[in-house]
Length: 317
Length: 317
Image (cartoon, rainbow over the protein chains, first blue to last red):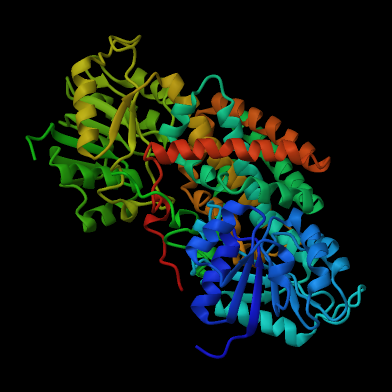
């Protein structure tokens, strides 16, 4: 364990990700002291019981004051308000970052509130489970996963905040210390990549579970009982936090609508193949999709125990 | 271990399911002797090497001759041909069953070929992985999973085959011996239930992986690298056997099109909510879908290590 990268870290939001960041930062000895904030008294009390932070604060400003690293870990819809609230107490030279699943909207909502001399380096760890809340966090959530940083312009951006090399590198070291691989990416490209690899999969999963719940010919108990044939995996994804995901879709609208449009187009063509009994078209697609799977296994991005199952209830048999 | 339920069992098709059935039947001491058949010489050679059966036959008829239980374990599109081929050698009093993912089409394709005095009890074990071939099978694939039997009418059906209580019960005992829970269901209802719990999830998974592969703005390497955010689970499903799944969609057309129609309708409404920024509608659906997940966990149908991951490549980190 080397010297801490930051003296005081503030974690604003103590759900699955905030709680995991606190535990991973501790595990790696990455910061000297952690101040946490959550708007809900229940979450704060639980964070206290779990001893997630050195200090659990009742306001975001109290946590952010004097912090060298401030990480926004709330649903992205709350980021603008949080940034506005803490702007006045931010220490010159502090780094503000986040873990939001969208990046253009975060830059739009957070950037304008931050004072000169504060470094803003948006980030996104690609890790999670379908669980929520402080109890769901664990120290190794980020191990072997990617964390994407989307620094703005690399130099001064429009609002005059420096996001220079040193601060980006310090944050990258923080995430590596949490077990992640780090990649720097353009924020617009990030939003496109995540729209197809994460946002659309979640939308589709939520949608099919909703469709299944509304059937008249098949009961909910049938669906639950016979879910092992594929449906079960969708329910896991569709159990993710509703507020977080509402905010993702509201804040990555254009990219999601673009990917959704292509998905629907392709699905119509599959529907037509089924209706007209075009077995060749079906077989051709079903063979092609195996290749991407192979790539994921080769890239070591397949987990024998998927994230989503890691903390699931053990099988009853 | 009690006395075997059948003397000779013929398994026609030695892929993931056929291979697993052979191993589970052996494990449970459920049959005295297993004869296997696969059309491909390579599969037959591999089955021989793995010693899956007591006898690996080069024709379906050779395997089925003198068998007390004949199980069709090929893709459902091959069932009609197989039934026609073995019809002449079937022993009076033998039970013919299958493991196909659709049941109405199997009854349509297989029933007419079977001679009087042969019992036809269609079946479907709800278990699998994304792997294919004889090497993919394992003895505990069916443990704790459901197997659905869809006997025809309970008495003589149109073609005059008896599917009486004793034969259904013997087959149910066989599947229980393989570790399954057994449920008897109307075949039409089976096809509806599976259309939503298995066929539509597979179709959607195949579709989104195809959509992702065709993007110009996001590379395949981006998709692979950042797949942990949800997409990865879809690729696992979309790696399933193309021939098997082509046959499923061609043979459960009406039920799949019905479910797909509802899914698309619901998806359009979600799309509209995203376009118009209707956060309440999104949040309402995303909250509702958590309930079904809860039901699956409560019913013990959630696996800490999902079937689909059980034999996957171990995580690299």
